[in-house]
Length: 367
Image 1 (cartoon, rainbow, N blue to C red):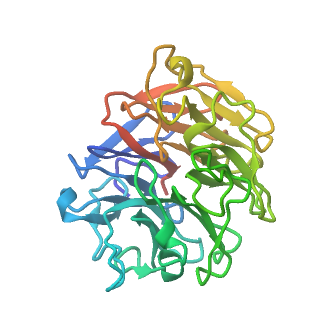
Image 2: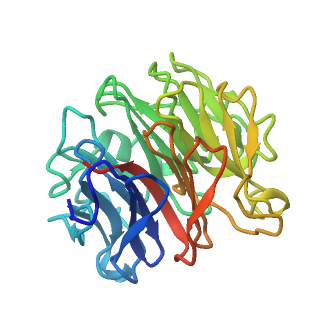
């Protein structure tokens, strides 16, 4: 751990269009910042590994876009370096990784395992902290792949959930294909989109073709999941099956991130935007909406947030929660502001302005 980041500090890793930043604070009141890392280059995702509280992973191009994507690894507060290899499709697949969207630490009993979600949509696993990668062929060459279509941001695998109770249980989200699930460690995958609307298609409830924007585990600990979709917000119960739409009570069906409370079951946060054609906050008022009932009811929180006439948005990786008590919630905007709440979303403070457009926000604790 770099000396400037004290053990026990809250750490917020922020990926932007012009580098990555680490904000840290011993009390979540006064914040310091390290960076930028990969200065001048896009950092699509950056995260502090919760298993050791000191390793940072980042997804960014190697030098510049033409050189292709890379996974970076380093000690928090120091410049991360590219791992020995990057995710790569098997020979003869006619596929080539153009961008790495998400890095997900693996289960707690496998401290060297990480997952990467990439574009064109695929999942890769490393068991040596990113130095070598395994092509998850059962998903990456799924029988439905020939019919997969990209969303507005590309054909990207952006959500990777690893069940803390069972590391063989994973859920992934692809835009604009939908959610897939494995319960056998990736040997086989099922489409899991029942009940999710695809309002832009003639058949609004297809087996796949939904534009999932983000997935998050419900803290109930029983396998329940929240989903923010292009066409609504959803919750799925512990036994799997169909999703229940829980958009009622929100100002719109459209939004990108969703973050679940790490301890309080049935509780999640969203940032609804006007819609696909105007991706800004309704009425120009930035707001974070919270449910404590799996989406049966929602409440808006705006104290300390800009508006009216605040015409910004939040991207799919732009919101995160920490595991402190009370829980901290963090939101980064596509106009470069980073906001933090120390009281589970009730009130907010801007902790940084004039950053480059924020692509990702994640939160953790330095150890």
